[in-house]
Image (cartoon, rainbow, N blue to C red; front, side, top):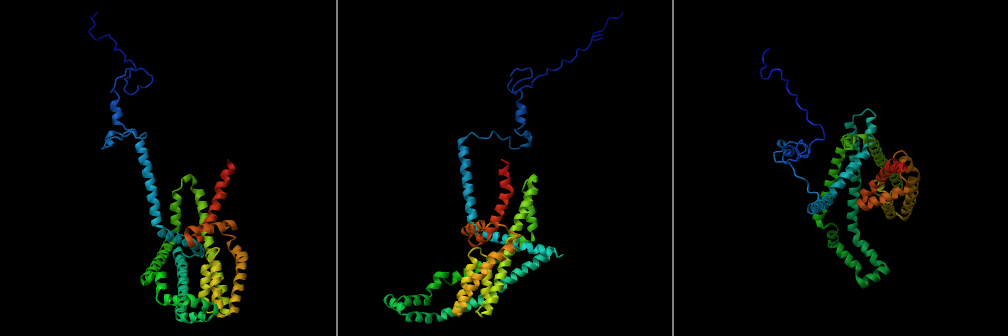
Amino acid sequence: MFPSLPGQGETTPETTPEPTGSPATPDQSPDGVSRPGVDRVDRVDHGADGAMASDRPFGLPGRPLRSNPFMFGLTGALGVLTAWLLVQAIASAGSALVLIVISLFLAIGLNPAVEALQRRNLSRRLAITIVFGSAIAFFVVFGLAVVPPLTEQTTGFARQLPDYVQQLQNHPLIRSVDERYQILDKIQQYVAGGGLATQMFGGLLGVASIVISALFSAFTVLVLTLYFLGSLNSIKETAYRFVPRSRRTRVRLLGDEIINQIGGYVAGNLIISLIAGVVTFLFLAMLKVPYALALAIFVAVTDLIPLVGAVIGAVVASGVGFLSSVQVGIACVIFFVVYQQVENYWISPKVFKSSVDVPPVATIVGALLGGALLGIVGALLGIPLAAALLLLAREVVLPRQDRL
């Protein structure tokens, strides 16, 4: 009836859906026509890692210069220079690193005694105090027993040197040689003139510097040993946390076993040296050898050195015995030969059977290589490190090779 007004009775056209398909590539519109600059805003606003440009006040990083030969050579040169500087730094700090290694070695060696006292319901602090105090007392007794006799013997030797030279001059063969070359007179003048002392110690200043350096090193080792002994458990846990979580349990078991073997070796070596010192003191005191206590402590200390330590102690003690009389010297030689057989084939296997199981060849090789690298300290560390390497080879390397 009524004419329809514009807009009435007309349906609103539906919105045409956007075509589905592969997303538009950069610089390309949704209809597939290439239009540079369409997606440029998105590329500029987002970096390679998805970060907005507003999050980077100094702009987005550019593409790395991986194919530039200059950058490749510069990177390699910087790597070589860094490695060289690192080697030089380690070489310069070699003495400090040796003191740290000695302190850690002593702390691991004293830890079994601390744990044994802890099992007797003592606190760790009290156990450390007892063990550390006993170790310091041993070194104090060693100094009191060795320094006075050494000073007295040195003074007596200097006083009796002219008599020794006169006795040598009375020997026919030596007298004929001395008349031709005046060797004894030159030696006497050289020693009396102080040239020997100057060359050996660099004068009084050299002796003072050596003594001060030795005292400082000893004090440093004592302080570091006490620190490592007090915080050994926390140091272990911190080191284990650097291992991935999936392997941490196995590494902890292997690391604890290595530390137990090192501690067992140090504790066992100390026990063997103590036995050697006590037996030597009883024997020398029975024969009335002078300075029996000092010689016994010297034998105990040198017995700590693998392979050659026992021989050094036996030679020095037997030499003092020969100064007393020929019979006493021969008795000392026989005693040390017999005792070394007993120590090597009965005492050492009994002590080390539950702590360190190292084949004899590995013991000799470890001690020789350690001694060549770090001297006496390396010889002491060579055997427990050989035991640790054998443990890792047995538990890690060999099973992996069997699976291949």
